[in-house]
Length: 493
Image (cartoon, rainbow, N blue to C red; front, side, top):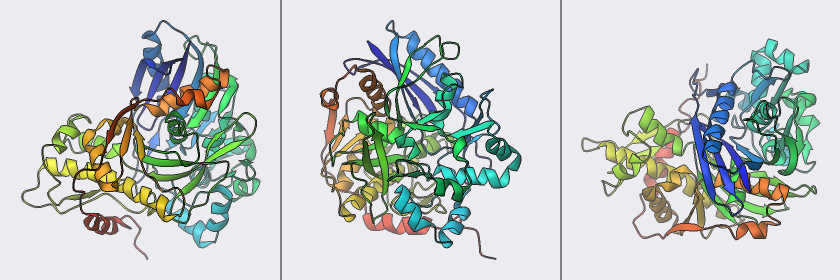
């Protein structure tokens, strides 16, 4: 018996076929284009995401003789997607979670005094990161498109909702609690959409998807749309919550860091939504079929693996992402160079949407190896700032960091991380934990596994990195972060 997992990430879609022993037996991957129509703007064409999904799934299915019995979906969170309920075509590109165009709107809402109540209700903060301000921006700037939303023809949702609509041929318009909790429209206490928040952001309740449990049969794929498969969609979770599940973090205090496009540290807080006073977010980890909710604290870093991609595609300093390890390892340190990868602003704990990428300390002796190593150090420094925030908040000090995600394959990065934190960094044997979590949710949902205890026995550790080297200067990092802040803030009149 096997399960299909779809991991719809920010730069591409991965499809995994996972056995009932938790082993990945086949995979497929397709990238899709990124669009940057203006400074700080990031968009995706929804049909490109769908095409990449079909392509990745097709490759995975072609490499196995065991047809999947259910599918789990995990996805880039917060991204706002619109689509026609009948044709399933999209009237505009999706606005991606990295997009910063609503920074001024967030400032205005903050000045009007809305943030304290928003934080109490949602566990989040006013930041362009989240879905609601993106939807309000569309309503204000594209009234003809928004009229179709208000009229009921066009649906809104996140990437999971969009893919389920495509996979079910328009029958299902659903999301799960973990994705809903990232929109600024979901009330943690009510455990559903908040009419007051929808009114504040001008989003019609009827346009939003129905919220369902994170596992259990919640929809069916249509064989005419989805590779001839008619199987239950039995797992849904935002990518970071899915990675938390895939890492086996089922008990209170269990934590992980996923190095993907961004880097995200999450810790399970059980059935209590813990509020942080040090820049962390309160979020739903997953919703159970019986109505119970598990929560998590989260620290979000907006740019991690994406900076390596930028070194490759933007600057041409490396030819492949994997090459960054060899080049960074060719020098003992960064030669005094500090790289703050705030290419789309700073997330936790600073939360500055106007920050921009900053490289300081360049001298005549600086080489590409120093810049590449400084980029890896910058990823690790951002994660260290987040981990420190867990201790500063008075909740859940982290004694060991479990890591996964594509960039976790980089041994230099993992060792730098251990040296900076002064604690062990444990890398899972399957670094594609995000997709694995979606498969685990789907399998739990249809009874392949009877409990999370049974799932926990499937986890394997690849390597543990012990702190053993001299960490780069924290003082220089803190100074560089201050220099990066506010860079893109519009000048006052």
